[in-house]
Image 1 (cartoon, rainbow, N blue to C red):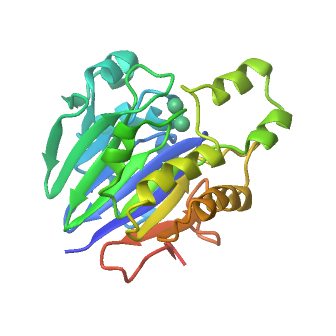
Image 2 (cartoon, rainbow, N blue to C red):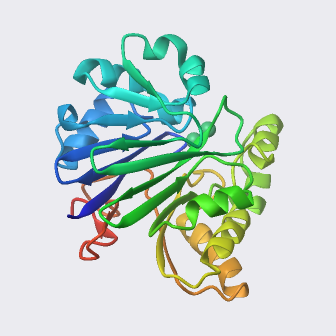
Length: 275
Ligand SMILES: [Zn+2]
Ligand SMILES: [Zn+2]
């Protein structure tokens, strides 16, 4: 049994991560337009009707934009906590919603799913730890700071999907209104490359090898190179060497850079999705 993880989109313009194991497929976040998410799923070789559930991390548009529409069109359940459900209100009307309280566990086919709280300016934002086929994927994408509790939830992961949103200096000069900049900097905003490096150093201190996808890179205030270098420098200073870093493209594309695909059998690791 091989677990395959595909990053369909990862940025403030939209997020969607697809996990597949045999006949079961789940989508984490659905922050693209209907047209785009349907197209990206088909490009990844999946008919949207063959999804089993849409898990949401929080209600922000770049994570939840078409969750309700996709759920209604294909009769899919949306899995989220009660506060996220309430915050999405009418957007989820008519969709089957399965509530997953923060910290509770749920099984969807072969996937064992646990959510955990993240510090971010939404109703009740969460990360997920998803175990299947003897491996674990840990996802913490929109968060402005990190805690030991988050470290504990992410520690079992073989694949970590963690935001490296911005470079602090680049954010200072990015063309954002001051209020936006303050929001991103805050402990309920988004992690910068150094903070992400510190979080990963804490997780990686056990010396275990892991793959890491640096996600949700800011277009204005980060670049893949800055993210890799900024995070890598912190890891190097902490003497952590077991983490393999890859930055996620903003959208999966047919041409390079394609996107990241991770497979639990180790054969397809980090290959371009469509190349
Ligand atoms: Zn986001
Ligand atoms: Zn958000």
